[in-house]
Amino acid sequence: MAGDWLADSRTEVAADRILDAAEHLFTRHGAANVAMADVATAAGCSRATLYRYFENRDALYTAYVHRETHRVFRDVGDRVSGVADTGRRLVEAVLAALAMVRDSPALASWFAPSQRPIGGEMAERSEVITTLTAAFLRTLDVDDADRRARWLVRTMVSLLTFPGGDEDDERAMLYEFVVPVVLPRRATSALSSPDAAARPTER
Image 1 (cartoon, rainbow, N blue to C red):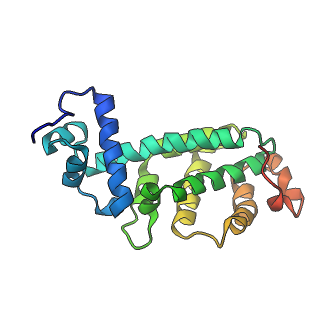
Image 2: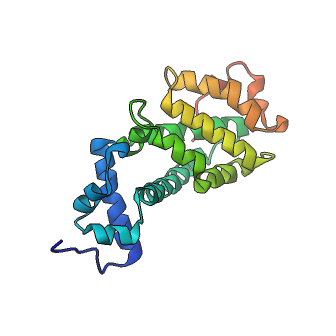
Image 3: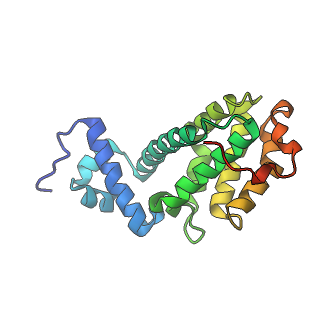
């Protein structure tokens, strides 16, 4: 391909430009429908150059998911940093993460019920997603954070695939079914009040 500008680029910069091109395609066509040849064309590079950075579509998917996972967790941490109660911080963090995925057409396409469930497949096998979730739970003094993180990730995938009625509905479900399971008993004081789920988030 003439003008293969990525061929001599630094690895990190070139990989990011490829992932940016892939994101544009995910937004337009849905992640499950994007082929490596499409990404190469959108990135303005040859297929040989593309495969030099990502050996197959699964590697491309993984790199994109991990890049976006770090972004989402960073933003979630900023949003809930001022919430003191651990139960509320967990609930608001989950809701914030769900909203970020849903607000991104590229990420939302991974959970479209009419497509192959690649979002769930990636979440199931991604050590980065589980590790970052467990790290967040440790900030809440959660016992057995690794095992609880795997369960929490599955719960979030379920809500992304089959959402609740609205945010209030999902918040109520999280307080009733997630907080008691994920947090140790000493961290569930927010549940003692029947209107805990209705309280506004602290900023």
